[in-house]
Amino acid sequence: MRIPSDQRKGVDYVQLILAGPLWDYYAECYDRMGAAMVMEDGAPVHRAKVAKSFRDANAMASIPHPPQSPDLNPIEHVWKKLKVLVNQRPTRPKTKDELWMALQEEWEKIDVGFINALIESMPRRVQAVYEARGLSTKY
Image (cartoon, rainbow, N blue to C red; front, side):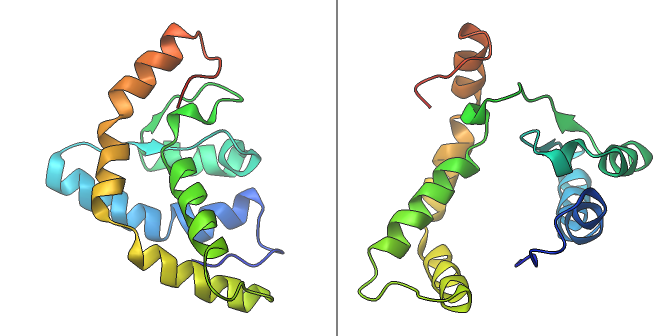
């Protein structure tokens, strides 16, 4: 989903993400597995009162995340992989629209095994952050 630069406030996050595709996925996971949790990294839109109110009103559980620590979020590794893949293209994007198209094309090429390995690494990531008392880890 491409979010316009003028729609990046807490209320926009709730409308465009929490109450939209994330809610649909969360509900599907909850129905299928009996439990689900959201991982947010503490960005201002994640901490906004309107976002907290939405999560509370909808009993949307979230994983506690230490401040200033991207170590628990595997998506950071996906962003890095996307950046590398886009930069390796024969012709680099020159406009926002070209970048958007390139990102979508490269996203489709990412192997699900890579994503699964990141997900499976979560217990090790959590343990490493715990042992580092919330500081940086090798992840």
